[in-house]
Amino acid sequence: MPESKHRKNRRRGKNAAAQGAENSPLSSAEPFDFKDLDADEEATPKWYVVTMVGLMILGLLWLVTWYVTSGALPISAAGGWNVVVGFGVIMIGMFMSMKWK
Image 1 (cartoon, rainbow, N blue to C red):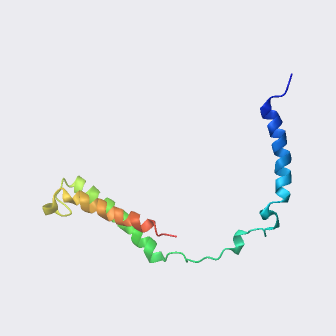
Image 2: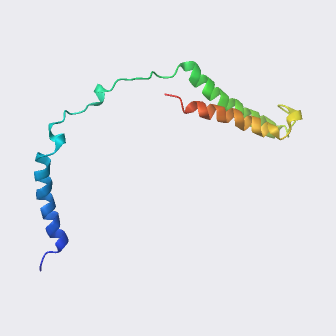
């Protein structure tokens, strides 16, 4: 049974790849190690993490309190805007998490 064109090309490709590796500009490159990287930025301070998590929990508690008390608490005059305030506080905490390291 004759070999397909695909199999023939694959054999040529291996030989060409071996010959091309000898002439590659990367063959003389120095190896790279992650130990060579410098930490440009430091980790975030503890107060940042506590504030971030605290805001997310505060926003959740704000929403739960508003739903459980049927709108009487935390601010009854705000009405439905309590949902916006609760989710806003949660989103501030979420945005802070993007800068957390």
